[in-house]
Image (cartoon, rainbow, N blue to C red; front, side, top):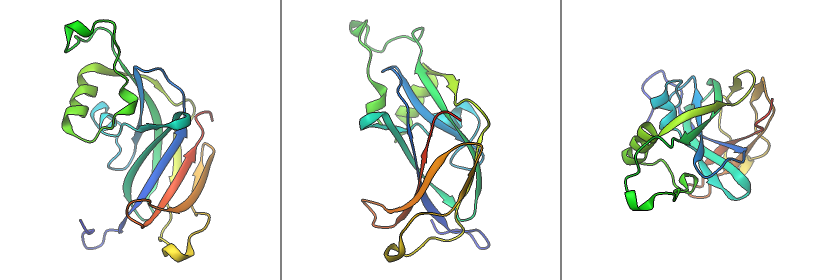
Length: 173
């Protein structure tokens, strides 16, 4: 949807962080601006996608010039929840290979998972760029990250061909 009158246009941001966790865990994000949030239900909707090398990614759209406060969160399947398939006792489904794209996945997180760790240190603060470059002008991205360390850059999105702002974070502060 296009932005309402007076609102900044949205653009795509891809967050990436390397983090190793066991098969009953997944990473998610919490933050100060929609689609992120600080409540458990908001966090459950922003589970990240696991990739090779234990790199977790999440893409979301934000208004240009947004100052975003955020943090990474570890969610874990809880052993006290009842298995849907009693015959699967002792078998752990690997959550990280799935995506949280529909209400069923969010329901599963809410019913079976709990927050077991927050990224240590202060919340991350990211000033997102105020304009998106043309694809032909892409180079290192703007933006200032405080309270942590990140590599910021612009890339061309593989599927849409549009610019995407990439934030490659480190877990430790």
